[in-house]
Length: 212
Image (cartoon, rainbow, N blue to C red; front, side, top):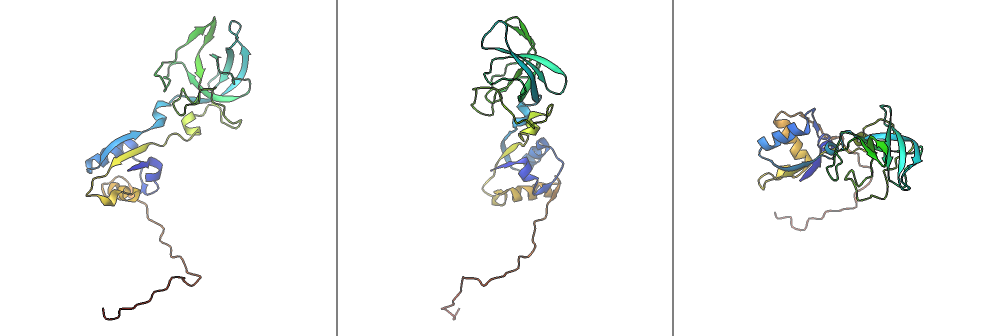
């Protein structure tokens, strides 16, 4: 059974981290097959504005871009056809790793021009197979914001292997109840407000065997 951390927290009031929750689940006898946390691989990537995008002096298909990711302007060389002045995209500074291929971004010189980072495509971030160009964000995207926060990618998915004797944990509510009983937060009460009936039920019941 899979649940996101945010879904679990609609039933469980807790400040525990996903690591603490997984550890307690294992202690309770629930095998955890894995945790898919897309934010872990995307740490460090930020929303950035392309201040300028000019043709590379030594390459027809490259552009020299000045990028502002909230920490000052940085120069990068970009080969994406949609790179343009004024757009907003996702910037990876030197020193972090490209999720798709594991390449470490470093300061380099491309065709005689310094490049100190990279404007990212969705393919390079391993969030889709689109590699036609760099990510093109809406104009209201906040410069300097963590991309995982802006794109709501920071919600880990916990994959729980429920054993046959624990049918009560085949739903998120059951998992939350188990964790609350183990001291990992408090079970959130369900809304049990009575719903008043305002029409006659169309379903009728007729008893034909009155001997029982």
